[in-house]
Amino acid sequence: MRRLIGQALPLFPTHARRTALAVSVLLGLLWSGSSSAGVLSESDFKQAQSLKLLFGGLMKDLVETAKRPDISTGDAGCINSTIRELLQISDELASYEYLITMEKELTDVGDDTPVRGLVKFAVDNSNVILASERKRLVDLSEQCAKNPLGQGKALQAVKVIDTTTGILTAIKSRL
Image (tube, rainbow, N blue to C red; front, top):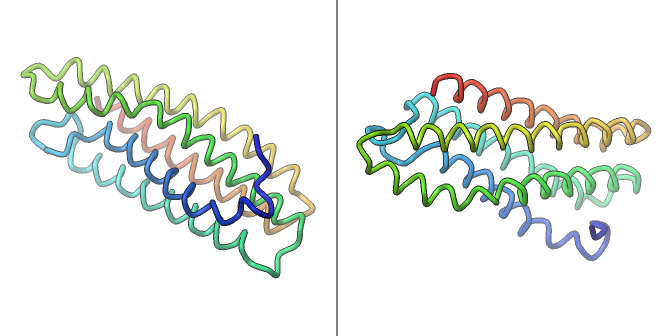
């Protein structure tokens, strides 16, 4: 994996958009766009939308903080590592993009059992990815203990992961 210090910093806004897109892809999987044809309720959809805003806000904050000239090298390294971990989440969740197309095609079928199975599969696998990345972010926050700003940003990312996992688990329990 390439280092995210120095010349790579200008690429973060592009990566942040890509990360937000990957989260949107996952959320698109969970919602077909039509409340009568989807397998999720309006409440589930609103919760999923809140995740998109939460994740996008976190990435924006991390990118802006990483660009600040007044942060220490240690804090910058921790923040860049947090961004790198979130980008990895993005890459791993993007593999579910294919399922969106399949899910949208299946919503036209009278029986929504296959769609529910597909959504459960996506939620289960997404939670596995999120659990793995959470462990790495917790480890990162411990490594950044001497850099309070960087540690705080890593812990902020852990909270977003926990919130996302909680919402996805709650959605799955209603399927």
